[in-house]
Length: 294
Image (cartoon, rainbow, N blue to C red; front, top):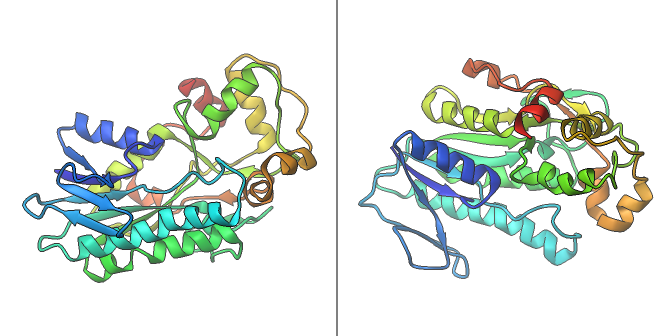
């Protein structure tokens, strides 16, 4: 199987590329701004060049700038939107115009689609939220419409918090936790809907194979935990003491708008549709998950 992959240098991109390659598939990363290889994205002109002599069986779109890496300014927010929405729209149009179209298109989204909720449990049928990250996810998913209109089976991957020491939130927290200088963020009550990286990859592989499933899929364990529970579990997994909470005012001083949009809030998200795949997730207990992956 030939697979076209965007976001190949990210946490999930590296993992899915490695796994698919081990299984004997050929994975082609979409090269940005250099005419090297058969699949190229020239961002300045917003053009994607696809070598039609190579039939692509599956497309996995994981492109997107890091949301919490920097304080949000107008320019940073525009970059966050552009790296997701415009890239996805351009890619969706390009694969829709192929003479031989791919059989399946996995395109990234996020559980930020639902906005923030303190108590209700959210599923794939829940409505979209109203904040910046929710609107971003709505537009991100809408950008896949050219591919859907061309008859390509499209799965919208609404990622939860993906846990791995190799990247993302866990990697960023490891050093501060090992130095015993941070604890739960804010109240500690905000809910984190998480999933392990191995389970993420298992679901993605199954979605490529399962020809019945399309539309939105929440990639979460189905067992959300509070920020305080997460901090305790992480501390325990690396054998460090659990520390007091970091006051919300300090978090806002450090991160600006990102604090109230992503760090001090959360939601309980389930996945009704993962069960349709018949996959037994490896990690549904947070403590066991962190012990296994650390």
